[in-house]
Image (cartoon, rainbow, N blue to C red; front, side):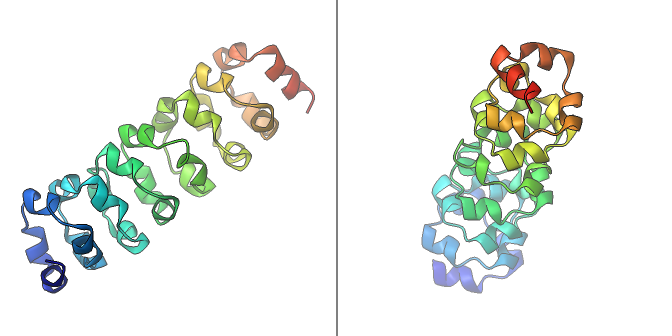
Length: 195
């Protein structure tokens, strides 16, 4: 089948049924050109198996149209390795659904560049779990836009460790809501005031 895939036109690729897409092997996916990836429909992108997603090259991942990337299952998102995530553009990261962002594992999230992390919306940040926020690197935390920092839940704020808190700028600290500040532990406050 891989040999057949490599000679199909983009129109023929777009004409494949979702059942056919779901049945493709890892060898088949390796045969897809970036133009063929671009030709996939949203329904087809949603039909790609987790195994299929995990075997895509960085060039293939970077070729996904934003609406098609949004269609990938949360399990598919969890299957992405750091190289695949790194291949996504800021516009692709921005297009991820809240459910997909929440699906990012604690191993995946720290690998996002600060630029990619800041492509996420305040709604994305509001949905992050405490476990996800706790693994953000100091570089990531210090790069957060004030609106995104203010969107974090009070529970997420409480998970920030001393290194993460000390990486915040005065502008970022000033952007914290009253509820967020009230949620800080005495240890966290001591860490902030000692900076």
